[in-house]
Image (cartoon, rainbow, N blue to C red; front, side, top):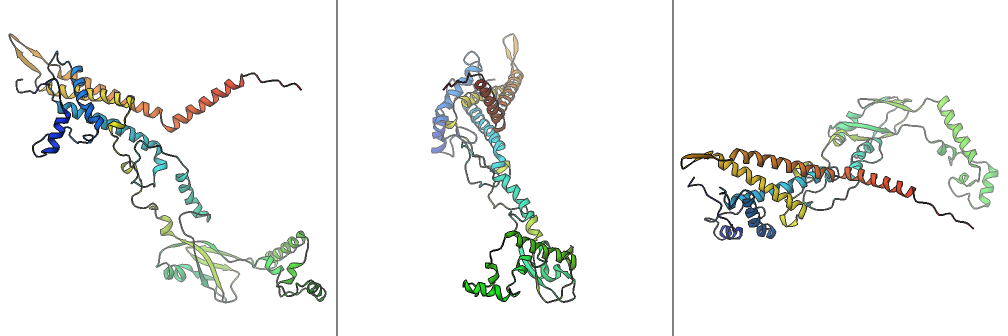
Length: 393
């Protein structure tokens, strides 16, 4: 036991820090990682935490087989554990909002404004399929129709040529009747000598089509267009098409050399899952929550950190005393309480972490909204019991 270091009763974090930074080759680092060595509040509190933990472990009534650097390490771990748990729960609470944002933003202890960005991003996938927006470009292409040729291979005629052989999916084919309104107001139909003279007298005869300036009831236009469309559907072959594996079959059979336009998407573009740039938040591993400095933690968190540092110190002291489970004394030997301290330290750490997690869960967005809804309902019930004024004229 003579070789075991005993807590001397005080410590000097500032002295160790100056020794390390002035002569790093021979000095001692105050904490294992040095996360908070430049944090003024941490530096001024470290010695107090060390003394408090030593007193709680029985000093000066009993010897405490720990050094100042052990208490400093426990203090550093407690601050890190608290900050990590807070950041972890914040990241979980706001993950749907943060996905896709830049990883260069420091989010620690900042208010996150929720928005519909993630929902809109998901909705864009459906918009791409419906042709109402989205992240996938709808491209346009065309093929030249040949008289008496009914079937066309769009892969051979367009995809292999214009998309380097990439698979395409046809979204729309512009193969349909000429709109009835165009044929009804065809400028080449003629309107009769009398009507033309009437239009000329108003100075409209030179316009094309002049007939469009006739003031006629809207229902007359609708009836004529319906008559044209009904005539097309009954007396003519319907304009339609079939597509199987991008093999296009047209009805009726084309009778002239014209260009048939269509819209399509490249399947590789639609199936590409990477739409956010490099350096965007993807999961919990790169959410930009940085380490919370001790000076930015207020009383509720500080108290938890002190208790956690004490629990770590108990566990460390228990491990040290387990190395010397019994020591000789005059006429007998005594047994140290290493196992009890280890058990107590681990149990206290577990309880503190559970307590903090439950607190963070109770402060989550969903729980808070439920509480606000309950408060609103209670206020409404109270207001319903308030007598209403009766106004008499």
